[in-house]
Amino acid sequence: MKNLVVLSGAGMSAESGISTFRDAGGLWDQYPVEQVATPEGYARNPELVIRFYNERRKQLLTVEPNEGHLGVAALEEEFNVTVVTQNVDNLHERAGSTHVIHLHGELTKVCSSLNPNNPNYIRELKPEEYEVHLGDLAGDGSQLRPFIVWFGEAVPQIEVAIDYVKQADILVIIGTSLNVYPAAGLLHYAPRTADIYLIDPAPVDAHTQRPIHLIRKGASAGVKELRELLKH
Ligand code: APR
Image (cartoon, rainbow, N blue to C red; front, side, top):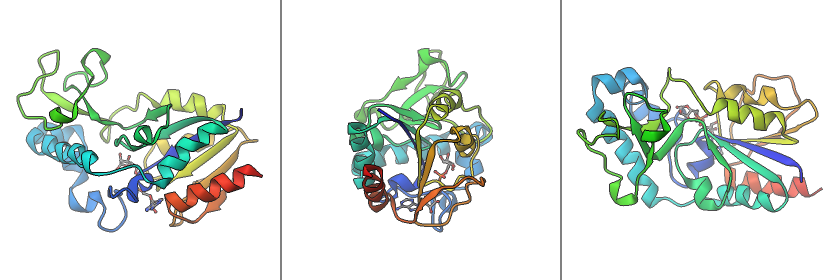
């Protein structure tokens, strides 16, 4: 089986009703990114940050995977698929993808404020625990924090993702503006012989001279077209 790596971003989940970040009316228009997605913002106003992620987390209970997520999961019938996602939602997993690497963390998990990447303190929340409060503590006695990689923080999963991209026969980029590094640099690790597809309804600058098969569609229609193209 060929190795197929998907790199997904917020546009993957747009048709499920989850806002993207940088489109007009996106999340970063509604909430200042430096307040809710940086360690400094968290230090200044933890309550606001905890509330912001409580809202995002509770939204998971009201949304469903879309045809795009389902189509990506179905690729496992034909390919050895690794999904590398910048998304913190769990829609790839809920659609049936079995190998998902979350570069920017996971909404359903919490961790220590002192040492966010210590696996001893990373915990999956049950839906009835989705509302985290100031004063709820991690195993090391620090405030429970959302298991989210904020701007300015290390991205521990990037090395794992690079290793998969280096082995890719096919790389499929879906719904990301490729503005945020190191995720945006992943495509440079794809072997020269790999085929690269990019699914996005808007033009995206992939910062490469390499040939890319562009599919100018939303995630659902785009993944459908991709699956047709990969049959031939
Ligand atoms: N289907 C596919 N793509 C879509 C759709 C859709 N229905 N609607 C919008 N898009 C595309 C947009 O055209 C844009 O290129 O999705 C992309 C979303 O880009 P961003 O909002 O910048 O999201 P993303 O690239 O995932 O952001 C990266 O930045 O804010 C941080 O940590 C956050 O993981 C996030 C990272």
